[in-house]
Amino acid sequence: MLSADLIRLLALLLGAWLLGALAGQPLAGLFVAALLCVLWQQRNLRRLLRWLRRGSDASAPPEQFGVFEGICIEIDRLRERNKKRKKKLSRYLHQFRQAARALPDATVVLDGKARVKWANLAAERILGVRWPNDLDERVTNLVRKPEFRVFLERLDGDATLDMVSPVDATIYLNIRLAAYGDDEWLLVARDVTELQIAHQSRSDFVANVSHELRTPVTVFRGYLEALEAQQDRAPPEWRPVLEQLNLHASRMQSIIEELLLLSRLEQRGTATAPETVMVPELLSDLQREATRLSGEHAHLFSLEIDPNLYLSGNPRELYSAFSNIVFNAVTYTPPRGVIRLRWYRDETGAHMEVRDEGVGIPAQHLARITERFYRVDSGRARTRGGTGLGLAIVKHVLQRHDATLHIESEEGRGSLFRCDFPPQRIVAATANAGAATG
Ligand code: ADP
Image (cartoon, rainbow, N blue to C red; front, side):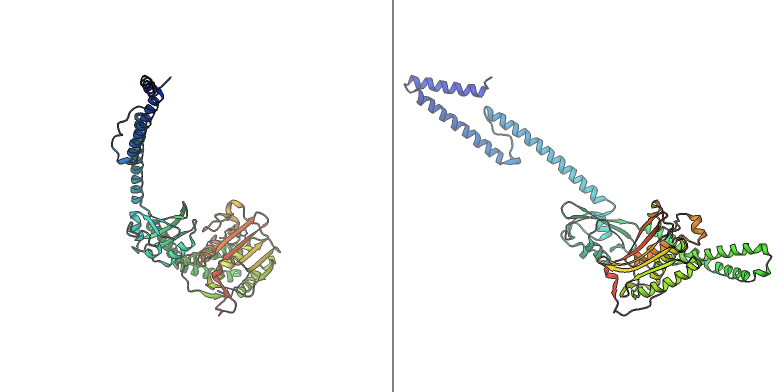
């Protein structure tokens, strides 16, 4: 089927050819008609171009004729549809931005150089980052806290930071970083004041109760020891009772002492005035203690210690952490088992490693083993005099030394406990050394 446009064109050419023929010049008539046609199309194309160039400001499409009219109508319709979609998108964007602005958690968008690109209202309230006033400012110039600077320098998506708000000292914040896009970061700071208060109340409660129990239990134990010393004067059936009483009183005392130590570790935060800790000497002392503890179980100790490797830290705390690991190895390794102690350094830092051939820990317990009072087999642990607080103390001490605890274990084959210290904690052996043992 021929379109109306084509029929019109053919009719025009035919008419022109006829007129030309009448005048004796049919080709000239055809030529003039074709020329007029081309000029007409040119005019229409130019009008269309002008209208298109005016973009979205253009009002109605120019009046056209034939196929151009169709083209104009289609383009106009597409434009209208696009305009509506754009409006809808910008409305969504606006709503999304408003929602993000109103988020209760402080949210700041940072570029790869930690410069502020966007921030919400909460960021102003709890971090002191104002948007748009602080656009392109480095966030570390706005949140002036050393721990925040260190945290940002690491740019680690898994890390979190707990700190006091730079705007209001009564607000505690938990800060996270998430990477997205092309080297862009989302910094989210959450107000965890209530959690912190609850945590503090729990710590205070535990510390107060332990403190209050300490004196009565010490008195109680003193009398029990006196009674036990004179047990030959007591009726024979009382002797096992006295033994049990003494055993439980001593366990109670250990729990109280360890709870007090844990609350002290918690309350002191991370700041300890570091000393040079002579770890090789500390470990030798520890091995002597462990041999004494092993007694007739006659465990074999193997030591591989770098004599020139010292740490910067708190000697008492480190002794407490290392002794918990070593004494556990003694407790959970059968008689005459081998316990290997290693103190060495590599490119990742310094490491204190204790490997035993003991009962091992089933895999499902490994993740929770450092929780307070968590025990694999509470009956077994209790009969061996465990409090369930030892590894919690280890974890806390290591945290305060920027170190981590690595555990590997296989049930029935043995365990490996390794404390990993970062290179910045290492002290050269020539440096002035402080006390070694606690
Ligand atoms: P506990 O005072 O009961 O030993 P810890 O916190 O030191 O408490 O240890 C928690 C639990 O981890 C222990 O009850 C024990 O089941 C397990 N455990 C710790 N060290 C070892 C080890 N070297 N071998 C086997 N099990 C261990």
